[in-house]
Length: 290
Image (cartoon, rainbow, N blue to C red; front, side):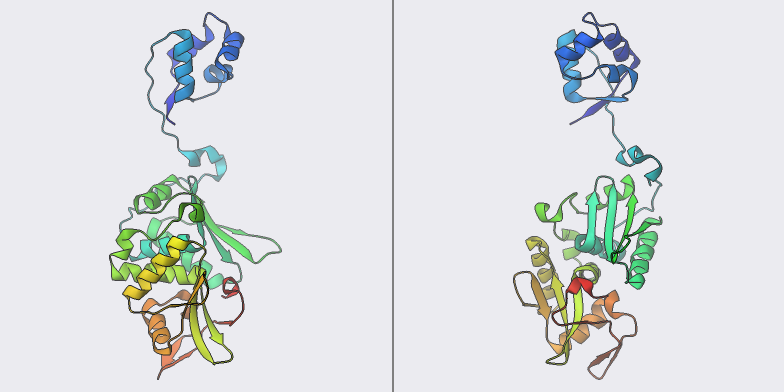
């Protein structure tokens, strides 16, 4: 619903109305004292009621609210870099789709706080992409950390490039089309998704490394499968929420091509072998892997 800036003329009309301020509040159903003493703006429905009851014709300028500024000292509304379609943005979107939350005030991304290397990676990616430093938050007595910011400019960028605000499950938010249409952008988005909702693990029984992707958003799972299939990777269905890459040659190629951060530190790929990966054992919670 639209809002409008309260003018000096409207404040005067409300203050001097024929019913009196208290009686007008009863007739109209809201506290009109705030409109001429405190409020900067008035909602479209409130303005309509005032016009009808007071029989007035008045034009007001539309008020466009900056939600971040309402957060006072916690606001983070500094200007950001000019952002265009590209690999860095595609990876950041993959990260937000995986472990991020995007709302009207800004963006928040969750981490295992033991995974310091990846926290630094995302922090540096955001700084390179937007030109700002994300804030950090570490939850006491839990292995949880957050990178976040309150910035309306970032909100507008994420909306512009295809993300939906709010609950990803409810909205069935998926991968934007511009990422699907470009193989390089697809790789970077897959990287973001694997580093957040993926796991590189070893099957003790078969002594083989696999890659798993887990997500409860049907559309996002389907988009992920579409992206990896387009790049020649055959993820098989493990259960309704999990898909795994089992083929040894494809696992090696995936790590070399996609370069997930989970597999960067100490990775050596020689003669069909992969060494030095940070892995989680089969059967462990993929979200606990670092």
